[in-house]
Amino acid sequence: MYTTVTELADGRELIYYDAAPGRDRTAEDRRPLDRVESSPELRRDPATGDWVTIAAHRQTRTYHPPADACPLCPSRDGRQSEIPAADYEVAVFENRFPSLSGAAGRCEVVCFTPEHGAGFADLTPARARLVLDAWTDRTAALSARPGVAQVYCFENRGAEIGVTLPHPHGQIYAFTAPAPRTAKHLAAAAAHRAATGRNLFEDLLAEARAATERVVLAGEHWTAFVPYAARWPYEVHLYPHRRVPDLTRLDEAERAEFPGLYLELLRRFDGLFGLAEPTPYISAWHQAPLTGGEELALHLELFTVRRTADKLKYLAGTESGMDAFMNDVAPETAAARLREVP
Image 1 (cartoon, rainbow, N blue to C red):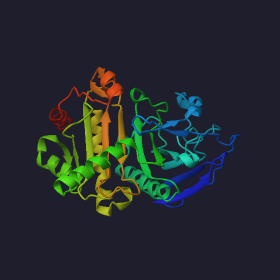
Image 2: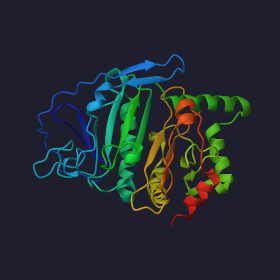
Image 3: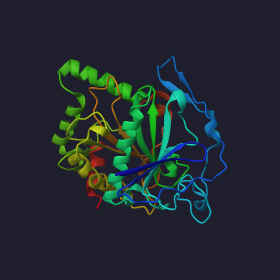
Image 4: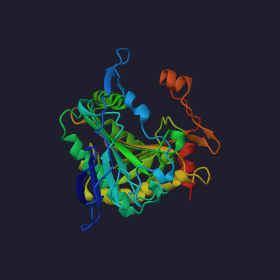
């Protein structure tokens, strides 16, 4: 992997990731941009203890632009975008409309490919590996920033999820406190250790691998399975067999196997409902916080809001109002359906 670090016209950082050296990354951003003015505020909900980000400046962010005005495509034919180069492999830059910035954290955009109409599932294994390397590099860099407590890499895909830019991309958030879901993981892991003397996430993986009816894909170093108490109709967790806290601790064998297995998993999601359009999903890397996360395990959680070809799973009264999930599909049924997808 080869990196080129440069700046956009407003001073935001841009990093090109290339599989080989020699690519010309000298193109300048000549847009007349003002410096980004954002002042998100972190407020703690005294009733739950959760931190809520107030980011009112994001109301003016780019919203469903036409394809010929996509800000994530390369700059071509006199049209300037967020990527000054005429082509790229993987690019990462600071979000112009960040939910977190300054003392509140940092938000970055990860462009997986210059092809506007593609998706992650369309990548080659080599390009998917380059994305993995970019996630890893940014995890290391952001973890070294003062005040950062946890790094979160994720992809939102599909209008049903709320995506406003259809170009294939993901995001990376640097939180200044562990996320609420991570706090639940920490509490559950501590209780499991106290009760059994074992690690919760190692036991979850071992249980899933033994209960093969919930396994979707398995390799030498990774297993993808539907969790026993899945919240979403089609939800898969992907674990490395060796417990590590974050992406930086994966070894070469684990990195080498990941792209092919993950791409197959995404393609099975796309084939679930027999539709022409791709399946909407959220793909989320859960990494341990920088301190106090010794019991946690790196894993990826992938799920879709679609429950049938013509029905979505809405987070309505029980889920949104009480954080009480109701799932319409049995986990064992979901796993069997995913195994059946060619």
